Length: 206
Image 1 (cartoon, rainbow, N blue to C red):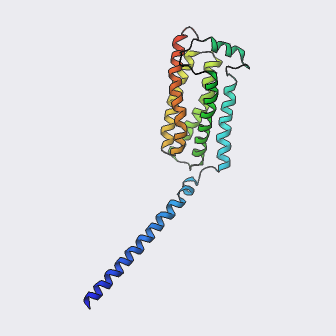
Image 2: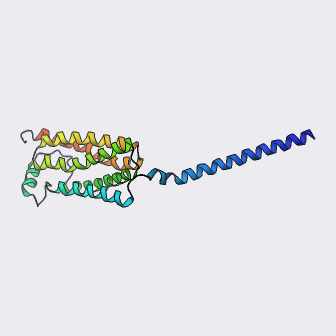
Image 3: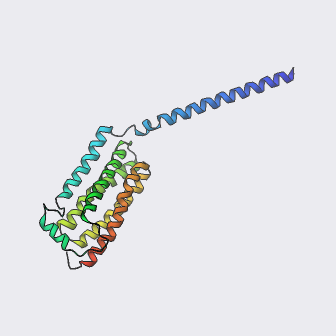
């Protein structure tokens, strides 16, 4: 009789433990299921975030176009092509293909950050994102607009520092946003090598 009571009590305990485990598993599943919506709660709406990120990047590209070395700016185009450049300088079509792709990725990263709720890390990442967006036409103005290889090198160094800081800070908030910024930072590292060579080979230029 005592053995039966012990077995019954043991069965009840096991049943209760199994029930608690099922409840805990369901709670975790519900938490995981709703995590994206909670994480996004407090950020901009998808439409507003797309408008801000896309608008900022479009403005950046438009301002940069004012000093681009193409047929619409023959003086700048002539000056750029007369510079002595290293053999690893990409041809003009490569620049024309790479930068739009990098800008689209930056816009995607900015969109994701804007969708995040405000926090110290998110706000720092977003501020660095805005700095990098502004520095793109800023470098174009210094190097092409002012025709200054030395100024272009200094701006490229500052831009690389800002790009690396953005990727690192964005990583604390959203891995995808950081991944979208990584190709931009990698290209800036290459651009620094190129800018240093152009400056060195054209020391007499402004």
